[in-house]
Length: 229
Image (cartoon, rainbow, N blue to C red; front, side, top):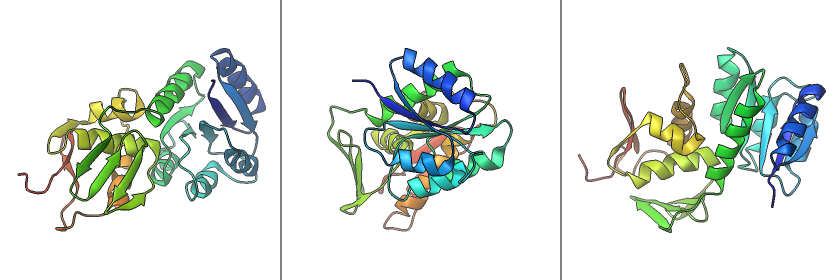
């Protein structure tokens, strides 16, 4: 069964090009040419991921993502203007899974989409990872904090999954990029840092008040287990 991708961009020529290219790669492709249409299409059943441009009429991509994240963890790849760091950072803070600067190379976009889809549907033979008051259901891709279900994006889930799999150990940032985004980091890319910041906000501190995810400067991150040094 093929995956269905929504391309949301007011550049109709680009949309048609991407629909043809992704269609040849076995994807079903839906199109939206303004923000309101994109948000409406994102709510239709059967959608697996969205490619979302920031600059669109009627509602910009940032507002589309902000509204979408109130109700859905649909994987989203943002299309940003080249060098526009502010839009990229805001998108990541709001829960975008990844970003790609325009003009987007179709082959690179395809690789990003496949990586996001692999991680959003991935599973492990170990059903549940437990650490402190966290329970991570790997097969169902659900997180419970103190018994309460917590909403995470696909990328946030994959990062936390990697950190918990190596609980108490330092995980290099490049390994988190591969585990969560399926790619190597590039120069000045702070995507993983932004996703970790979002995770910290959603999880809050541990019961003893300490930070759950510790930054290991110049290396990566560590999920600090209580009782470990």
